[in-house]
Image 1 (cartoon, helix red, strand yellow):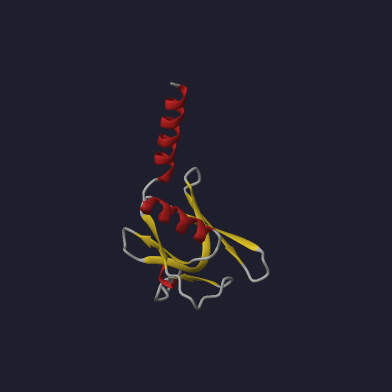
Image 2 (image 1 turned 60 degrees about the vertical axis):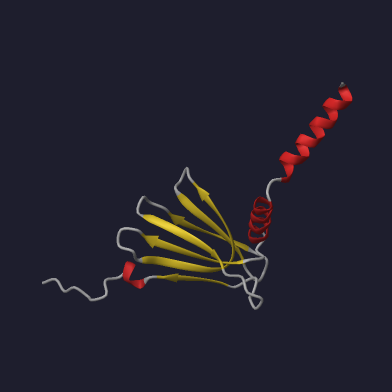
Amino acid sequence: MKKKFAVLFLISTMLVGCGTEAQRVSYNISQDADNFNQVRQLTVINCITGDILFQMTGKMSFEVDSSDNELEIVVEDEYGKYKKHFVGLADNVEYIVEDITSEKSDKYRYELNFNPNMWMPPKPKYID
């Protein structure tokens, strides 16, 4: 009886631990990206206006801090130093992270592009 229980326990553990191929691939891709081996592009969008607030491209790891409602982004520079960036999230702000890995990419290069229309008016306003 103990042998049967042990065998059934072992088989059930193996079946549960395996998961689907898609789950394993998803886990492996996430681990690879979090180890700065994948090039990602982060796009932050104002959902009310449809404007892109900014984009960040490079090898990065990110995590959503729901307690502060922030997106925390970590990048590694060419000197092995890590830099952390924060993006405040709101009800009308969404983000998309794309995997855009290519063979010709620099591990330590990242780029952050702001939409200038979101920070300065396109035409100056004169007040008398």
